Length: 303
Image (cartoon, rainbow, N blue to C red; front, side):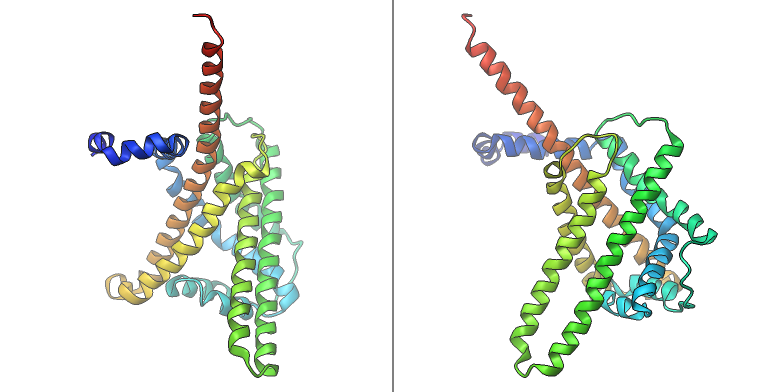
């Protein structure tokens, strides 16, 4: 197949016309083809599943402090997530006891466990960038816990905006007569805000890696890919599981768990591709600079 692609005239024309873009795409596939990188998606998915209950518990406890009703956030997620994934969240969060103490030993332990998500992301990032991690366990744990707290706060603000939008939507629906046009505009603004906030969360996660010096513009391309990838995967997977496939018939009571695990794996794979895009961008730039310097050197030589 690859020999056919190399000999294909159309492909060769595209390579000659867009050499930098073809180099970039080739580099992305080369990195994704490495054995270690192929194992990172299930690696991250495993730790997300391991830490899912602690981090969700912490997030909804913070949300409960402000909203005093987690159902507002859950009702919004129902329209976005696959039905089986929503069922898992509903069972975990639906029966909140109303306990609002934040600084407890239990929550500190939950935060310690939840920080493993950031550590798995951190390890994956270093592996893709081929950077050796510094052996400072305590320092890494503290950084992971701080970044996990910041991540929880970002998700909290996203939840607050979602709840506020719901209240505003209901208010406008009651007091405005011609609500149809405004509803389309409102939904569009809501979508744009959601994309901006999700991309901010992903950009923060990528930019906050301590062992790699990078600028925001170095990670924004991968962050945008992850943002739109997560939205498209969640929306497409929701349609697929809700309309075309009946997992309940095949897996019976395990249907929700199977769908939830598959969804987490797909999101993890999209995240890995986003990191690889950032890495390929830097590698391609370095290759172009090296080629440019060689050309300048040979061009200025008498030989």
